[in-house]
Length: 116
Length: 118
Image 1 (tube, rainbow over the protein chains, first blue to last red):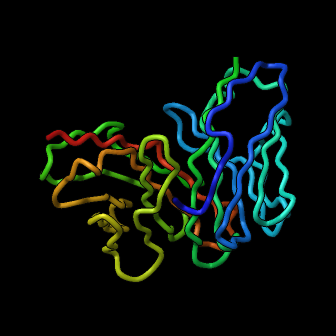
Image 2: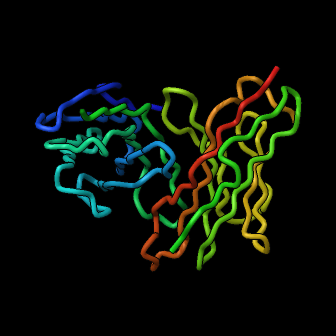
């Protein structure tokens, strides 16, 4: 247990569906992240939130919409996804964002998404 | 721009043998370097990290890595493999320059799957 939980662990959705992924951290951290892990590709950073403000958006398609209502919760809203969006979506948190000494990121177990 | 190359997508060793997972990086500024491990159906867990100071870094589960600036490498080693070490290992680099565009971001390698045979 890393103190970061994600639900659901598995999700199958059609291209016309709307679904949301949830991440919760119990570590008192101020920064939260969404990553995409596809087969045979490096982890891709999607979004970063620091103190509930989005500070990074790595050219992610608009069919992915993040939301950070407070420093403990992070959502990824999904709509009209494509089959190539099938991947493991990992949430992470760290004490702060962008400090001089890189903060360790703590990862959740991920949500395995399959888009049909 | 930063990049990470992990040589060998799969490494297989016998139990008790030396583990060596290779990582080379590219960075225009002094890097911060990390090794993460991912067990099946789990997220990533930090094994060790190098920021400044001693170039030989010790981590959890008996792993260590040495930062070699001249070789731009940060290879991960463990003297004696255990069955429980079977997992996927990721090397990552972060920009230490506060003025850099990659500051605070982790760039990951493609991962190396370690298999340990009895």
